[in-house]
Image (cartoon, rainbow, N blue to C red; front, side, top):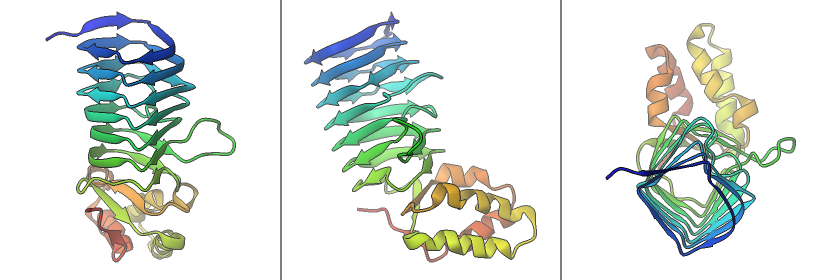
Length: 236
């Protein structure tokens, strides 16, 4: 079934108890809105800005896709007890400035950049608190900071978690890389760069990223020697 196209719409105020099915929203803007118990089925959000100072509560997104160069789930916006089933999140800035509390997400998260709170950059952080992510696939997800995930359930496969208590893994990486004179160490220096990974525990990397990032077999071996003894189980 084709989707009905809706272009350049703006939502404000209270939106409650509605259902949207088989729609393509292009350039939908949600501003200072309270969205409650709204259901979205087979809805695509292209180049949409879904939450300037907005709040979503008890909403359900089923088979939805969020994509486009200018798409964002809101900056800032907050999601409480929302459910995203078999959804696709594709884009670097989609998760910039959102807080998710007690939410459940499944599907694909691709090319996302997740940042910690920064004292000089307002509404830039992403927070997942007490969220269920076990059925998510991470594809080239970049994580910067130590407070992005709080008490969350991670996917049982597709990502790798590494213990970095007191930045010991970063220190180990720095020590090993100092002793290597070849360019094979560069990828590990990037992954464990102190300016981006300091304080992050666990360090989270997705398999798709790891399988494509290393230029040589030896560079991958250097990485594995660094993380040896630090990998954590993410199975619940």
